[in-house]
Length: 213
Image (cartoon, rainbow, N blue to C red; front, side, top):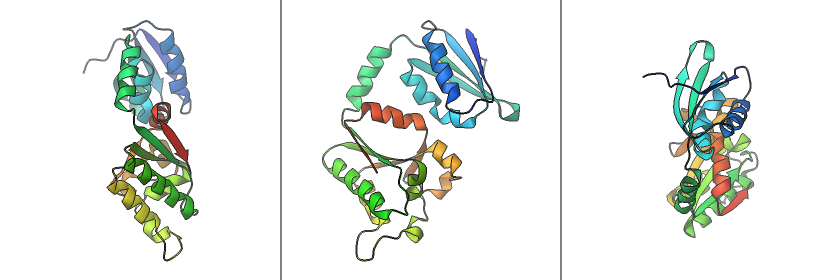
């Protein structure tokens, strides 16, 4: 593949996530429609957010190129049709409902409540997502059954998760959180998806309602 021709290059090497995205946002705002921004970076936590960020920043992610020593570069072309795109996105997701889970399984009542309310939202016709950050990511792991300290005789975390999944609730785990907590995709239940932190911001912008546990 031919390397895109950049109109501007931004050096964000050795700068921690999300600084490369923040600086790229500022640079892109100063550029004209159709121009391409090249960004040099080294923090891999930036990668999962690039496509969603570019979409929200009135741009198009053209390519991400990995290089030696952990360095990579990404290319973003500035678009000129932001208003129409955002209006279409809002129309498509007008029933989006967001549940943010940041509480760990050491507080099983909070975790069960998060999935219970997610199930209720789905039952009320909402396109519902449970987005797990920080300690909440542990709820999506396969070993939650063994670590669940829910009182006997009542619903378990796994039961509440199963109910939510049966209702069509999407279960997503912040990819940057997973990296910090050393959680791999194979550690998660099959229905859980790793997704970048920018998705949470995008959901919060578009959601009709948000609950945090």
